[in-house]
Image (cartoon, rainbow, N blue to C red; front, side, top):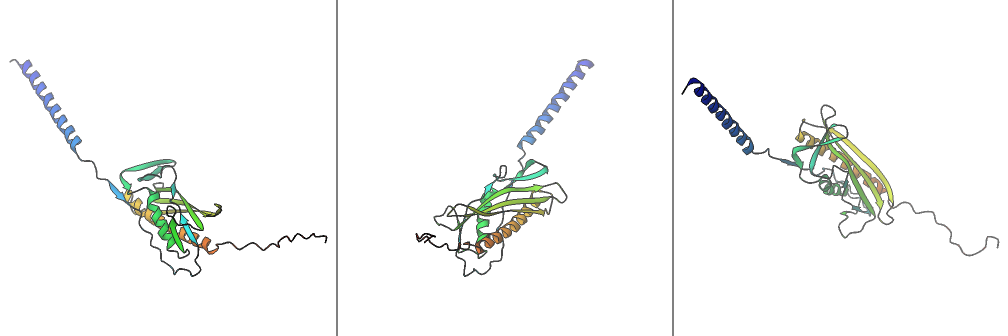
Length: 229
């Protein structure tokens, strides 16, 4: 074998070795397990329970919250640019925000002591007033340092008999995150939700205190007599 042939053979062996090593690294990358997903919840709201008012005679029906587009899935949203919603890849809520919020609203409003009963709309119970809510946003915002969790809830109280909206209010709360990651956003989101639900409970209690509205002044019945008699 001359020197030229020997050199070509060495080059072929080196190329084969490099291909083998590259294939092995690729196999290692393919078999590496993906990161574990983490799941988070919105916790129960801790509101001091006042003594039930002896005059509380109103029953409140609560409809499950609706959610704006983009906020109706378990994915946790973060925002770095205005109007652009992004999702954490390996961090999620245990359920949709609307489903997690439903029992929290019932507990928060029920613990206000302003109502005889607070029940979910899907039950067979009937009520005097109805509470409709809509989640406008629940997101982790990186517009500033520290980042902040931002929660906005709109609430409507409806006369359940006439279907007329009596009053509505929008609640908006932003809380600084404890760390610049998904967990920090979740902790801040829980605090924002708790503050909003405390405000919502007070709002509902205020409306219940003014219900039913004062009766209209009595109007004399028409006796059929002419004003000219």
